[in-house]
Image (cartoon, rainbow, N blue to C red; front, top):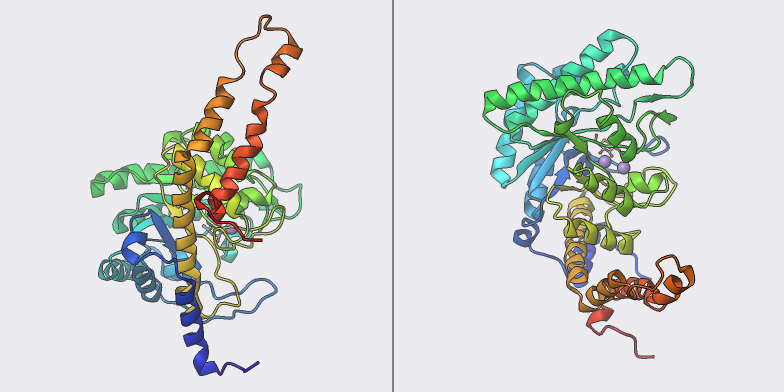
Length: 413
Ligand code: GLT
Ligand code: MN
Ligand code: MN
């Protein structure tokens, strides 16, 4: 084997990317409501056990790269772009202006803003800590993010209360903490109502995002379902303004069927925003790019969302792997993630229109017809026994759609 000299490695990656084919043009990619977070582009590959493997990526660097790829929306945490000690003041607004300029120059829009309430030491006891001054500061941060959101034209604000929990039990009284957390959201929604008037814009959609574990040992709102209960608990002043931002992997992490979790959110009209990625069940938050682990499940998820007319953002909340270079982040990782998403989305359209799936589904719903005695359990069982084989037939058809076999792909053996 011939070693590949370092000055030829990028060219090799480019050549093989081209050889892969099947990529969409930036114009086509822009037709989808896909957002790229600043933190995903700028993730340098670090973790508790991992040193960074990549250099920093600036605000302008991320936005320009997203623009070239054809990712039409951008999202950020407040502190991804504004250092904690520069928040609230003139320097913050100067950075916001810089961001707007970069977005305009590259044809992007800001879709979502979120407050970092987990990294800084001030959140050690969570944003709903016992100390009132921590909670007052949290409220200021949330209101400030809503303000930045209006300034940048965002439609969504996301809340990931990952640090709302504890390592050791006893000191924290859960009901009190949840009430205090609600106070923060109430402050954000109240501020939003005022700011929306001021800016002559609709209020933002406030989206709660659950993760079952990490970074606290025990989490007070670990799942999207727990958050639905929280939204309807009576603690929120404006429950109509608050919905969910489920993340695909966060549902898998606790062993859920992501499709079923999304269905529960859809039933409540609370599926506002969706973080897309992939990973493994009952493991930690590996944030792998969409479709690389569970493409069949992803196809099923998108069939559900398409058939319910979901029209919110698909936020690329994943982490380019540590083995990907700065060049690879934008030459391989993001474009391929976007293209797999588009392919799966269009396949979901194929699945919905597929005549075999349609006929099988209709037959299952029609059943075998009425039985003479509605309490005759044997007759009922017999009546549609053969139809039930269609469950597996539909699953096979979906697999065929996924691999292109419905269009005749097969192996000559
Ligand atoms: C953090 C988390 C993500 C959330 C981000 C929004 S922060 O990276 O793991 O899933 O979407 O705060
Ligand atoms: Mn997320
Ligand atoms: Mn995650």
